[in-house]
Image (tube, rainbow, N blue to C red; front, top):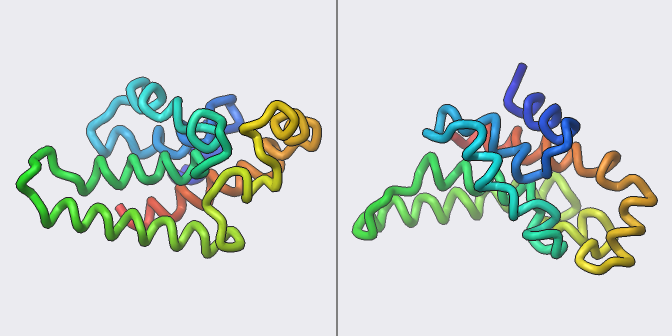
Length: 145
């Protein structure tokens, strides 16, 4: 099973989009699955369910950071490479999704409001749209790392 398949399966299991994207990559990036699920938890729903940057994209960015960033403030090359790859990821993700990376734009509802969240739930957007975003993010990051 590919990491993108594992990510979608994780999402369908009930984890949020960020957790679902990060967790399949975690073991090869130095994290156990439980730690990855904890680290990525606040990023779901567009950063704490505010509708900002898509959680699937955030999970992918965490994976990129784990792979390419260095724990030294002096490593300017690694910092630049990480930023370049983050921008590349976001551009590729947006390219697959009508130029969008924000959760509220991807869903067409502002889940940062009670009304928007309720509308998204009633329309089944988390079940119909989000698995695609999870798959897109996992496929792209799989190619990049």
